[in-house]
Length: 464
Ligand code: NAD
Picture (cartoon, rainbow, N blue to C red):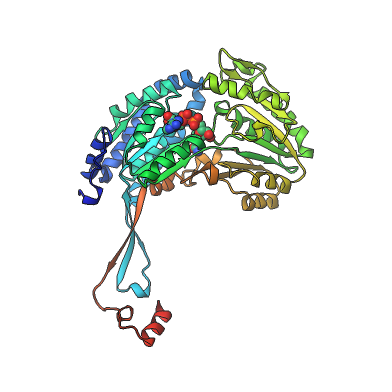
C-alpha cells in the first residue's frame, strides 16, 4: 500500500507523523472501517447530547432546541446520508471512452487525499468540526481537528470525546489558539479545511501555498435579504427574524441586512416587531430561547454599530450577561461600517430600494455573499434573482433552510470562500478524483503514430 511519492515528509511531527504512517498503511481505505468510524461518530454525539448542550450553554447560552436544530440534526442527517451512499460514492465510476481511445475503458476512481487538517470556528463549534470530519472519514482520510479556542468548553469536550470514540491511529485533536494553529499550518497536510473569517482565511491559504496543499475555505460575509412588494410579509418577517435571531445572529448564513421595496418597508418592520414579541416575549434580554454574544470583544464590537442608524426596534443590552436585544436599524448612511463589515450579531439594518433591479444591483456591487435570500411571490423576480445574483447558496422565500438538503452542496464563492461540502460534494472535495484509462492492446489505432500523413490527419479529424 505504501507508495514512495507519499513518503513521510521529514518535517512531520506528532500527531501528523503518526497519522500519516497509519494512512500510508491503508488503514483508512477500508470501507467497513470508514462506515464503523461514522457509526462511532454518531454514537459519540448521541451518547453525549446532554454534555454537548451543557458546553454550548456555557459558551453561547444556546437553548437546547437550537443545539439540536443548529448542531446535531444536520450532523445526524449527514452521517446517515454518508453511510447510506458511501459504497456508491467510493466505487470507480465508468465514463464513455471515445472512438480514438478504443479499445479501452475509462473510469473516475476516487482516492483519499491523505491527512486533512480541519480548523473550526466558534459559532457552531460542534457542527463546524464534526461536519467536515464526516466527508473526511467517508473519503478515507486521516484527520487532525483544531476546534476554536473561543468556544472554550466545547473545545475541551471535543478534545475529550474524539479520542474516546474514533480510531486514534487516524484522528487527533489539537487544541489551542493562534500559536498552535500556526505550528500546525507550518506542516505539510494533504488538504486544509478551514472555517472562519476571511482575514485568517488568507493566512491559511498562504501557509497552504508553501506546500501546494489544496484548501477549502468556508468563510463569511454579508448575506443580503431582498423583500419585494409581492412578498408574503407575515411569512417573510417570521422567517427573517428566526434566521437572524438563531444563535443571536452569530450564524455565517444569517440574513446580514434587508433590502425592501418602499411599499413593503413599513409593513415588514411592523411584522418583524410582532414576530419578535411572539418568539421572545417582551423582555428579550432575559428570554431563555435567546443566545448570548460569545465574548466581550464581540459584544463591544456589536455595540459600536448601534449608533450608526435609527433604532426602530430593540437596542438594549446587558454587558454582564453578554446579551444584545434583536435590533432593527433604519436610516443607516451608505458609508456606515455596519453596511461594510459582516455584522455577525443580532442587529439588522433595513434599507429601502426602488425596485428589485435596484436591490440586485446593490447586492452585485459588493463581495459575493455566502447566502442570498429573496422574498417574492413573483416568478419573474425569482428567476431574475437566481440568474443575476451570485452567492454560495440561495433560498427563495426562506432563509437558511437549504442546509437541510443533503444533496445541496454548501460553500462560498469569491470573498465568501471556496470549495463545497455536505453530501456527495463533501466526499468529492476531500477525495482526489483520479482519472484512470485502461487500454486494450488490439486492434492498434495506427493513425496517432508517426509517420503522419494526410490520410491519417483526415481520419483523425473525422473520428477524433
Ligand atoms: P475563530 O476566531 O474561531 O477562528 C477560526 C479558526 O481560526 C480558529 O480555530 C482559530 O484558532 C483559528 N485562527 C484564528 N486566528 C488565526 C491566525 N492568525 N492564524 C491561524 N489560525 C487562526 O472564528 P472567526 O474567524 O471569528 O469566525 C467567524 C467567521 O467565520 C465569520 O466570518 C463567519 O461568517 C465565518 N463562518 C463561516 C462559516 C461557513 O460555513 N462558511 C461557518 C461559521 C462561521
